[in-house]
Length: 217
Image 1 (tube, one colour):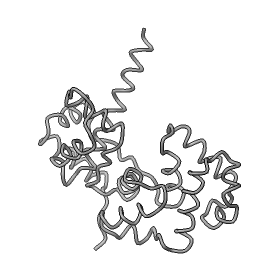
Image 2 (tube, helix red, strand yellow):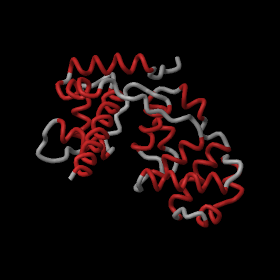
Image 3 (cartoon, one colour):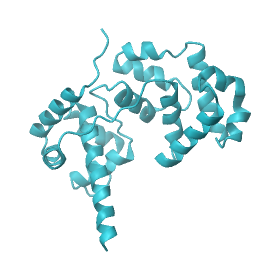
């Protein structure tokens, strides 16, 4: 049976349910309402984008993705393979990132990784299939499951924004470890993805509030 992804209605209902169960998430819900349905399209481009986002700013990753798309036409796995590592390096990719992108392209081209099978797989199997790709770790796999497949119970515990949001909301003395964050998230099953979206919503809102305050000074 193909897993069902979140809809806008299901997201709002799950956020309301979490707000009833968790004091900190109730604060977020009462102040900001249901979280946005941040989503990304399925496919090669999104997986490349996720790889590019590792260890760099979102703006830098977006700029690099645009450069790749402008210089790899059509932007498909087979074309990237044809052009090779040297071409990717000439566009500004590191040797490591170039090898990651090419490994993904080869796996998609020879069907070792199937995006249609991925969409039908359960969370554990889909995650395992993604992590087989060079350069795709837990965070990248979780982001794809959460943002693209819109699975309801995924929690990318290594995400720095989530760590920051939980630290501030729960007024912790220091940043929690990945294991501690996963322990907190257990209380949010089977809607950990929704909790993550609420925490991102809180993190972004807090960041904007800080910027607004600084602009007034």
